[in-house]
Image (cartoon, rainbow, N blue to C red; front, top):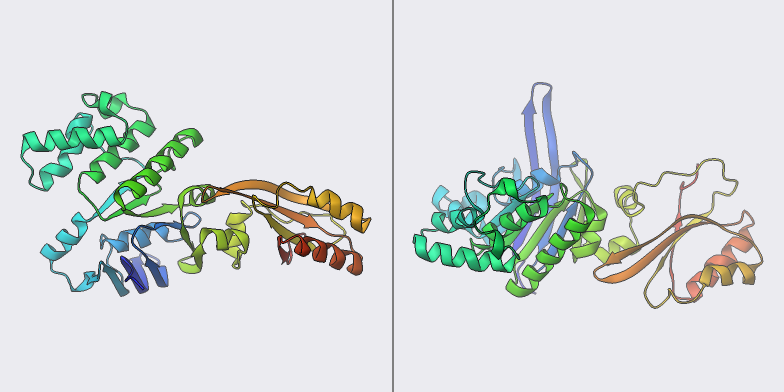
Amino acid sequence: METPVIQIRHVTKTFQTRDGQVEALKDISLDVHKGDIYGIIGMSGAGKSTLVRCLNFLERPTEGTVCIDGVELSECSDRELRKVRNSVAMIFQHFNLLMQRTVLDNVCFSLEILGKKKKEARQEAREFLKVVGLSEKADAYPSQLSGGQKQRVAIARSLAMNPRILLCDEATSALDPTTTRSILELLKEINRKYGITIVIITHEMGVVQEICSHVAIIDSGNLAEKGTVEEVFSRPKSKAARKLVFQGERGIARMHSRRCVRIVFTENSSFEPVIANMVLECKAPVNILLADTQDVGGIARGQMVLQLPEDIQTAERMIRYLKERKLTVEELDDYVE
C-alpha cells in the first residue's frame, strides 16, 4: 500500500497557561493519503486548529511525530523545514490578504517568495486567477471584493506555491451557504485537476459531507472517531460523532417509549415509502423525531430517527422489516429523556 503523504503518530500538544498546563491534543494518530480530501471536524475548542498547525510545525508537538512525504519534521533543520513548508500551502478563515496590494500582486507575492522574476510571476499569477474565476479582478484591491472573492484570491495565492498539500483552516466559516458551496466546488475541482491532497479543518458536518472522502472527529483534544465519511455518517460510533451527524439534536422530553432507531437511506432505497408501508404492515404508529437528507460524496443520504412502540414484539418486527429492505438500522440509547 502507498505510504501516506501525511503521517501523524501519537501527537500530543501541551500549552502552559497561568492556570497550569492545558493538553490541547492527546495521542492523535492519523494517515492522510495522496489525493485525499480529508476532513478534521470538531466543536469550537476541540483542538482541531492546533492539530493543523502541528502538520506544518507552526506548532511543534510536545510528543509524537509528524511526517510529510516521508520526512520527519522534528528532525529537519530550519532550512529543510522551510522547504517542506513550501509544499504545504494554507488558507485561513479570514483570508490573510495584503490589503495594500492588488489581487494580482497578492498572488504574485507567493511567486516572489519562490524567487520568480517579476514578469514571469505576473504571467503565472494571471493563470491562477483564471483557475479560480477572478481574471477580471486582477487590478482590484481586497477591500473591493466579497468574502467569497477574497477566499478565491487566497486559494490562487496558495496554488501559486505549487503545493502538494493544501491545509484549509475554517476556510468557509466566514461565508454564506451559497458562497460556501461555490468554494467547496472550487476545492474539489483543484483536487481533481492538480491531484493536490486537501485537509479541511471545520466545525460544520455539512462541509465534510459535501467534499471529504475521509474524516477524523476531534473531541476535547482526543481522536473520537475516524473513517470514510460514508462510514461515519451511516454508523457513527462515538458520542461526538453522533452529535455532529444528528446536527446537535437533543433528546426529546415527555415521550412514553424509549426505544429509538436511526435508519439511513441511500439513493436506491429512497423511492419506496418504506415507513408508511412498515406502519401499515405492523399496524402500529411510530414517531419521527428527526428526518433530513445530506449530500455525502455526491450521493444523497437520508436519515431518520424513529421512536418505536413500547410493545417489544411490535418494535422488533419493525426493525426486522427495515433490515429486510436493506436499510442501515442502528438502535440509539438515551435519545429520548
